[in-house]
Length: 132
Image (cartoon, rainbow, N blue to C red; front, side, top):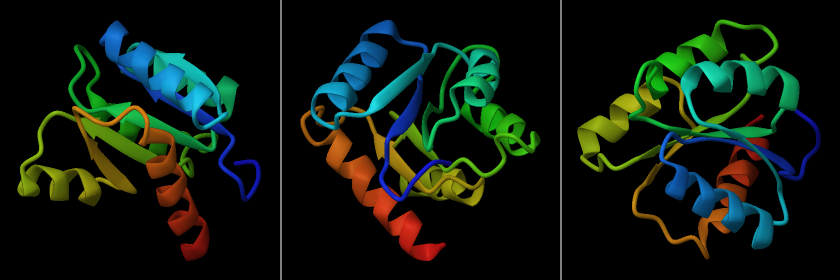
């Protein structure tokens, strides 16, 4: 992780339209450096090479889903400490609690507000920095 300020976010999303909206939102409104991955497998590689401050990770993806990707990231010393925010369409409290118990800092629910997305990530980031 780089600095106190959130600068680099890896977006892991298999839906190309959602991925585009998230990435544009973070680049334009958050002025963030954004990496992109379309699968869990790709995320494991990109997380090592891109070195994000934070990962925004879709829960439901074909093949390696979000929870499996999180376990893979935690199992690699190079990526184990990267904070994760899950992005999901499943908004039931029990499901959201389960995702947090897996080690996610936060759970964002689809649909989200693209205009407020970078502010929400920054708020989670500042809380995370304060806890460290």
